[in-house]
Image (cartoon, rainbow, N blue to C red; front, side):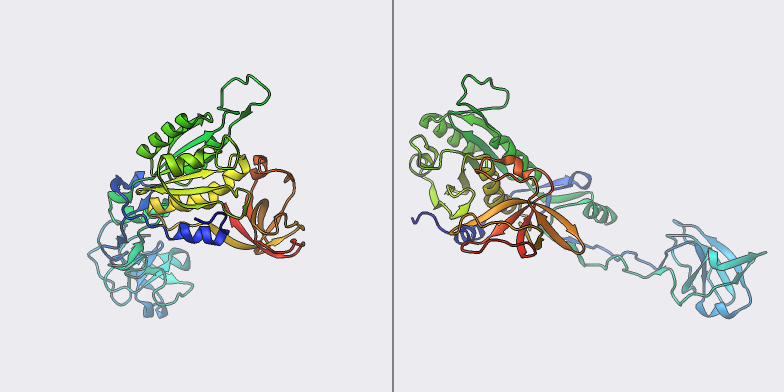
Length: 403
């Protein structure tokens, strides 16, 4: 296996991963927000099924607008069916949402008429069919309204409710197990006993991302640089999760055990190890049966970026979702150097949509190592700089990943 492939090659491997089976369940529509549809939602009827009034007014025959007056013969409240029929020089007072009475083809708004005794006088004419909702205006019978793989949002719930769908079939959320490795790191709440110890944020940051994008998380916490402890943790994680993610232990140090345990002790199939990217080149992506185990770098910014680039697309696959990372064009309002000529790089930048375009800048972004997680604060996107490209100049059009 060749080490340090380029980013495009790593993404091709990721894109070619097929999740053969995703379990489903039925949930109540009201509880389906954020879940992924496992079946197309198809209209069982036209909506509306009959011509319907779009506002309060009087149902008339279009040509009767030429008459001096029109006689009101009935009222037509919403939710009831009026038996009267509109004939020449007659009208029926009709309310928003009511079925249009037989014989009528146009609705004249209340504000367009003067009511005198039991008649209306039209002060302002309307076009034929005005304020009449045609059959199938919302949707037509047998039309696919929401496609399988859609992440359910509020509008989808409303449409399904209008179809009288009580329960909907969705994909079961994938489970991601997350752990941080390193004898120097402390979990949140642990007391520091020497100055060499540092506080781990990785496992909680990655848990938050996974949860935000629709995965269940098994939080494994922090494990020391001990082969047996790491082995036991990874075996346990593989038993409970579709995707196992660790941070730290994948570089070339004497105590970087994770990569060897994944490859040798657990016998995983390594799909790639090392990618020419900045940050996070020391990434190990492996498969064990129908599950995936990914070792990410230990620096906070590196692990966050590589999680977004590699784990999120994998979560989307296990969700059965049609989601993907969103790449758009933006205008760089400031110059920015290319810091690693032979690698693709991803830099946190501030993003704003104004004057019909995305604009980015680097205000308050610190320059330093891949440990600076505070660069992810704010309204953030990732600037993509391909390998062997020049420094970015103010005014250049660039690619960014919207988060």
